[in-house]
Picture 1 (cartoon, rainbow, N blue to C red):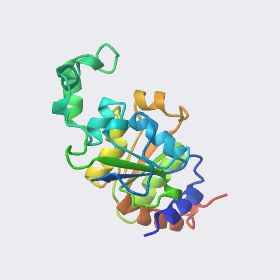
Picture 2 (cartoon, one colour):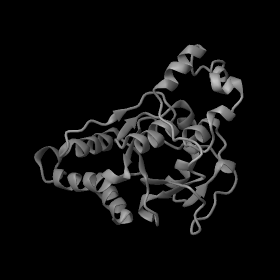
Picture 3 (cartoon, rainbow, N blue to C red):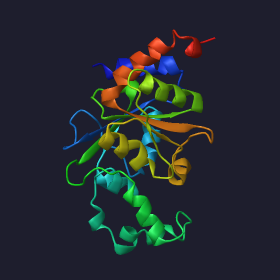
Picture 4 (cartoon, rainbow, N blue to C red):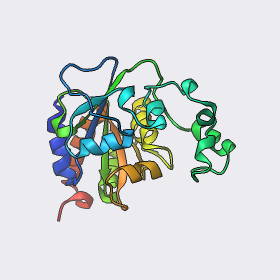
Length: 228
């Protein structure tokens, strides 16, 4: 499967303003991709790839505790008690109390720690590796069309995300569930990414990308999806 070709087709069919991002988890650092310089948050890494950068990152390059935990680079048990409980989020206004944090975490996906040591990021149109997840920051119309294309031949519904961090909702969730996910991002991601207030986020498991692109192409021949 040529993911770069699929990326170009996806850009053309949806007329994306932002590059689709290819994400891949790796058990060892790759030999043919440059390591990220410095540290950044997982969501900022997505923005770097949207802007055209191709790189991989390890735990050393992850600046965010959530990014490291949800992406599987660090075990939650290794964090101090106030992080494990979520107490540090309360003064920042993310949750009212610890029970709310804990209930939220029960519904959040994360990659099991201890398996992967590196994560690769690239614009999909430049990816020289087979990704696990494709991330989109797009307008609501484009997001709706991806969800329709996913249901076009399967009848499947995507998974909606609320305020979960994007490292969970837009990366770990599609990886672990194999389902298209969509949502509005979280306050941390929106402060660390160059996304417009009206843009939404959609992630596609790489195994579903070819089918979705094919369905989008077929849908363009139908009345409701014809371009005017």
